[in-house]
Amino acid sequence: MSPAGDRYVAFLRALNVGGHTVEMAKLKKLFEQLKLGGVETFIASGNVIFDAPRGATAALEKKIAAHLEKSLGYEVATFLRSPAELADVLAHRAFAKERAGSTIHIGFLGAPATAAAKEQVRALTSEIDDFHLNGRELYWRCAGRFSDSVVSGPKLERALGQPTTIRKHTTVEKLVKKYG
Image (cartoon, rainbow, N blue to C red; front, side, top):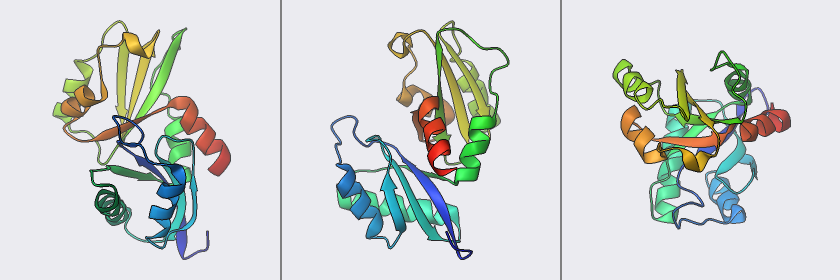
């Protein structure tokens, strides 16, 4: 990107789940309608990489979310991160010890969790699920199969008091490798 602009990764909530199917070609066109450049999609789970003029990220998130809602007919929470921010997310060691057979998922939030929300998320910890919050990210370590967990996205959102979208740690790794 030029000195006048930045590269972003948009993590979109509610795409290609729950009956809300959007082809990646259509999603790309929706971003291009906003005059965003270099638009690419990354796997069919609501990850869009693009260039935008340098400016207020929060305003850009709202603009994208409003355009997607108008175009698709339902709310699509939008979370933007720069490639450098994603590298920091990936570098953060949320859990002191490795746990064999576990998977790590990363939840993207619009704002850091409040102290009360952190307590509510901590209360969800179990033998299967472990959580860690850092800035605008939630790290969720799940022992065994993800389907064994009693925690769901909606349950996490209630605890957090705000929307989130979850991606596998490996997806974030691939994004950082490709765009970071």
